[in-house]
Amino acid sequence: MRHLYNVLRNILSHPLNRQAPLAAMRRFVLWQIASRCAPGKIAVDWIRETRFFASHGEAGVTGNIYNGLSDFEEMSFLLHFLREDDVFVDIGANAGIYTILASGAVGARSISFEPIPTTYHRLEANIELNNIGDRVSAYNRALGASTGELVFSLDRDCMNRVVAGPTHSDVAKVPVSRLDDTVRQPVTMIKLDVEGFEKPVLEGAHHTLARPELKALIVELNGSGAMYGHSDDQVMAQLAGHGFEPFTYSPLKRQLIPQAGAASRPPNLIFLRDKALVERRIATGNPIAIFGATI
Image (cartoon, rainbow, N blue to C red; front, side, top):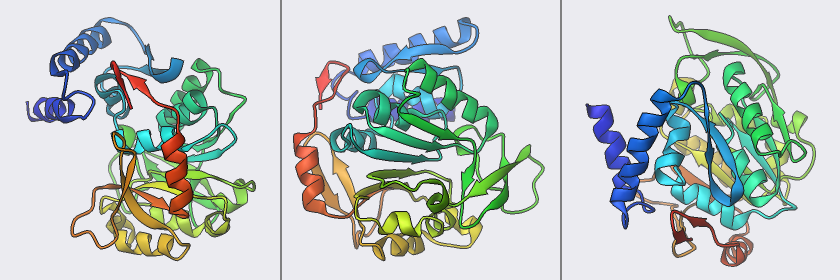
């Protein structure tokens, strides 16, 4: 019951649902019925003629059915900021929701990394569903500070992570490379969602971070790095060393909100270099139509 309460609270508090809560609840109920009755995965229509596969219990995906954009601020920023000639790197791509937005909705080129084999197959299926294979390079591997192998959990859905110690859970050995060794071209934007393994990934991306073409990163920082011996502040210091400052984003106002020195930080932050350029881009980004609203 508590899980249901949390899901409903998330739906009703989402910015795209506040003006039409009954419509949001209708989407929730219809999905619960459809996902239990239909065999296999269901192709769901999404933004700007994109689609994604979903099935019952896929928490990292179904939030987009209920809320339109599950990570409202970060996904809106991507849609307002990216352009067709940009390169987007999706680290911890999961089923490819951000990849779909970048390459399907915007038309940018994506380079996507997903280490879990079964999840990687979901990423591949969504790439094929959206016919964006010519704009996406997908890799079934992890990224880190050096090449080799890492052990990953397999039973945490969208929260699978590097195993830091002994475990009784299902695990898999996954190949690891450095971002700098895999991506040689200039990158415009990175999304980094690796459940606490941010610091090693960034250590293997020194040259990518130093290139002036990189203007923005979306990074999840929720304290999970403590499992691997580092803090969120250390990750922020890594990025600050390359000239990136932390912000959040207000999509309805198209406004960047500085977070440096904030007493409390949200778990997802947008790190920017050349704020003036970013502001010009988001001001002129194409509008997003979803659930009868335009952002």
